[in-house]
Image (cartoon, rainbow, N blue to C red; front, top):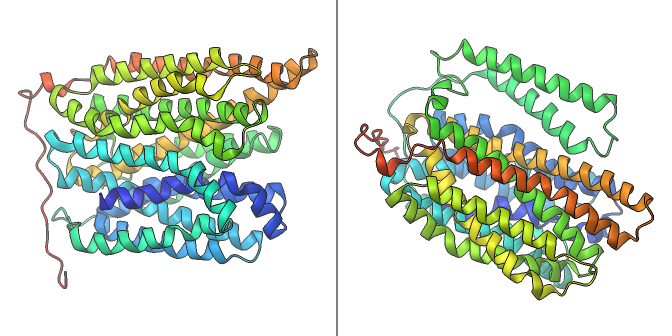
Length: 471
C-alpha cells in the first residue's frame, strides 16, 4: 500500500490538472498554450525518463530511487502551488515529472522482489485498484478543490500524501539489493532520452503545429535515434544494457508490453471523446462529467484485486481476453447510446461494463508481464513497460485528437449542427480504440498461461536483501 500511495500521486497529477485550466489561465494571466504545457510538460518528462529511472533503480536500489522520487515530487508540488507565473509553473511541473519518473518504475520492481510469483497478482490487483482510484479522484477532487480553496491546492494536496508515503517507506519498505555491482550506460541514456523526447514532443505537439514539416522532421529524428539506440544496445548486451534483449525472449513479457501500449491508446480513445461529448454536447459541468465516468473507475477499482488473485490461481490469459472483450463491448454501447439529449443515467450500464473489463485487465497485464522476469532485471523491465505505457497514451491522444478535429470539420462542413456533427464523429473515432482493444485480445491468445506451465521450470530466485548501515 505504501508503494501504491506514491503511485497514486503520480497518476492523480496526470488527470487533476485538466479541470483547473480555466482558473490557472485567469490566476496566472497565462495563455492557453502556456497552460497546456503545464499538462504536457509533466507527461513529456515522465515518458522520456522512465527507462533511465528503471535502470537507476537497479544501480542504487529501488527503495532509494523511490524515496528520491517521492522527495522530488513533493518538493516540486510545493513549487507548483506557490508559482508566481506560468514559466515557473511549467518548470515546476517538469520537475514533478522527474520525480514521478524516478518512483514509478520502482513500484513494480519492489513488488517483484517482495512478493513471490504466486502472490504477485494480488499485489498487482491492489496496484491496479489504486490506479482506478486516481483516475476517479482526478476530475472529482480537482473540481472540489478548485471550487472551494482554489487551483493551487490541486498541487499542494500532494504534500501530506508525499510526506506520509516517505515516512511509511522508511518504516515498511525493505532495502532490496541483488548483491552485485551495476554498470550504467551513459551513452545509451543520452540516445534514449533524445529519441523519446523527439517522439513524445512530436506526437504531443503535432496537432498544435498542424503536423508541419518541423514536426515530421522531429518524428523522423526520433525514429532514427531509436534505431541507433537499438544498435547501441545490441553491442552492449554483455555489458548490462539499459534494455536487455533477453527480456523479449519471454513471450509473455513481449505480448504484454505490446498490450500495455494498446490498452493505453484505447483508454484515451474512449475517455477523451466521451468527456468532450458530455461537456460540449450535453453541457455538463466538469464535476458532473467526472461523476458520469465514475462507475467505470469504481467497478475497475473493486474488481482489480480479485482479478489479480484469480490470475495467480489460473493464469491471466483468458481473463485478459474476457476483460478486453468486455471493454470493447462497453465502448461500443457508449457510442450507440450517445445522442443529442441522452440522460446521464443511460450510460451507467455501459460504463459499468467498461469498468469490469478494464478491472479484469490491469492487474493480470502487469502480473503476466513481470511474472518470469529475474529480480536483477526488474528495474529495466519496469522501465520499459512503463515507458511503453506512456508512449501508448501519447500516440492515442495524438491519433484521437487528429481524428476528432478532422472528422468534426468534415461533418460540420456537411451542414450538420455541432451536436449532430460531434455524435457522428464519435461513431467514426470509436472504430480506432475498439479495433485496438480487439487486436490486443487476439494477441493475448499467444500468452503462455503459467497455471498450465508450473512444471516447465523453476521460478526465478528471489532477490537478496542487504542491510544498509544506519537503517
